Image 1 (spheres, protein in one colour):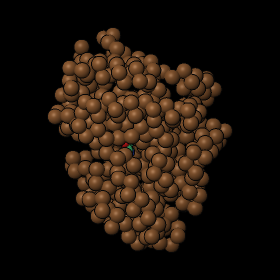
Image 2 (cartoon, helix red, strand yellow):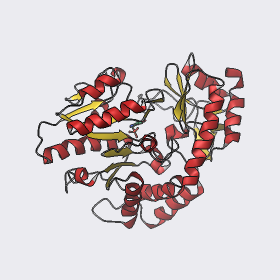
Image 3 (cartoon, helix red, strand yellow):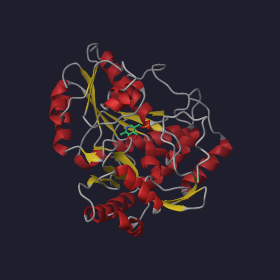
Image 4 (cartoon, helix red, strand yellow):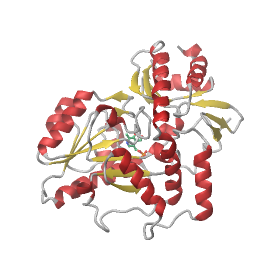
Length: 380
Ligand SMILES: Cc1ncc(COP(=O)(O)O)c(C=O)c1O
């Protein structure tokens, strides 16, 4: 069936989708032509509590009946409550809300530059990022995303951004002119590759030594995806700035930048903003998400089911890498594999020509993993 979304009124920046989804429940989604799929894409690592989660749905409906949007001209207790919870979970101090991962990274880069300027370090303007990293598609976020295919036709990008070809060279590149180094703990779009712990620790040490800020991009890895609330917790990093989005709203658009107080102080009134940032529907959804995902039992569940998924994948595929419920496998042709899996009733994403990503909702149990393995039996 040709999806009705395939209309000439939509710009051509996405490949035409083969499936039109109209409903979801837990880890399952249903297409317009009535098929059921086990959704191991979770809206690209977004719907961590699955589809139509009762607590999130109830929170959205309740808030929609009260007030959806006020802008930041007016206050609301929800905004402060969600910010305080994120500060508590991250051990950082203050939060800026926006609407997406790219926006969060954009704001983080601006914050890092302004924090340096406010310290009187006008020359500290550079950004260092890692090979294989992905931080979004706005000009700033794209400038620290070293993927030539994504740059093509959009240059010139932001000056003073460097992403050396090796991790070691990236560590070396952090110098006295570096405002910040931005990293993912597990490179999701880069193929689901965890960055080696010693590299992350070396980056943190070098940032400290050179006076640069460490931004950890938890847009994909945050909100329990890797088995701890933030992926950096598992390796004991202490970032100056953390960016979030995706799972935080379980599908309601949201982004957040978390920072230490002395860094956050650079965002003085009027220096940065977003009409929709801190939108009350997003805040209501985020509050419900945090109540569930940040619970120690829930995170233990992610680690337990994640270990089972890893074991099942490892017995079938080469180069199984990831953490928690975020895994990548290597296959000869990722697009063909994803298409055949969908035909068998399992949704997955291709993140590279030979890499397939598994990011199911975090609410799945081992029976869903077994069901996924049965569906791909003929493809292994
Ligand atoms: C690590 C990371 N950062 C940033 C982004 C960009 O987020 P968004 O698509 O919400 O702008 C993504 C999206 O996949 C991501 O995985």
